Amino acid sequence: METKTYLGRVLIAFDQLGNALAGGNPDATISARLGWIYMNRQTMWATALMVIVDLTFYSLDGANHCLQAYDKTKDENMRRGSDLALAALGLIIIPSCILLIIPVALYAVMSK
Image (tube, rainbow, N blue to C red; front, top):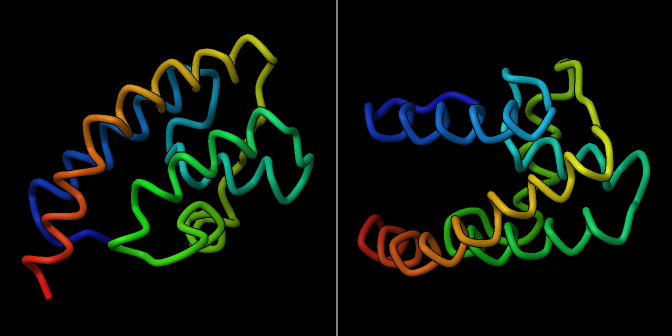
């Protein structure tokens, strides 16, 4: 995923850090990891997290944000991680999405 703005690159770096802290590949984003888990395992917990992330970024990417992110990074070495890692991922995703949903929607409206 190529991002041209400084802020966009910093946000992706934080996203990748969150994924790494939750036992994932440090070169992949949380969204891509959730898309990979959905495509390969279809766990209910990961699907619920994917819906939260997809809703947060719907105004920017439309439906299926996580599957789009996975499609862009299919060559990465993805990892599901343990159930504990998925729980940690949830602790990162839920508060982050609560904080991001309004700024993301405003950015989407202002950039059109």
